Image 1: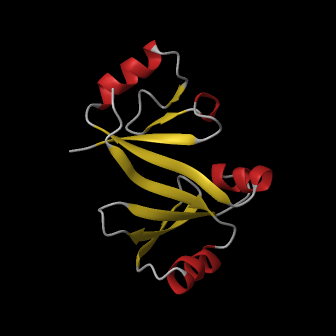
Image 2: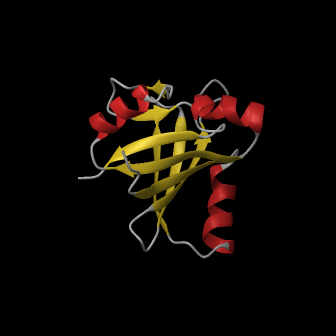
Length: 128
């Protein structure tokens, strides 16, 4: 099992507009799009990077969302790193064999639980 590289990074912010102003106006990144997911309880801002990856800012729609709870307990900051893998099923099987705790292993999105990744939520992204 090998991680091919970083696919994208997710940063949680309290205020999406303030986050956009930081990443666009202060850091010089180009805002690609803003979306909202009622299901996940978040607003998102996507900044594409030249290497094909992207930075995703997420802000909670309410305090009861996963992101809202994370901001309440840990504040703003790094939320998720998405690692690209060649074969998701094979990677999941190897991680389980190695005793790694997974979230959503029967779902389209699989994550390594933070307790198995030094406190970091790691998304596994299968490259096409």
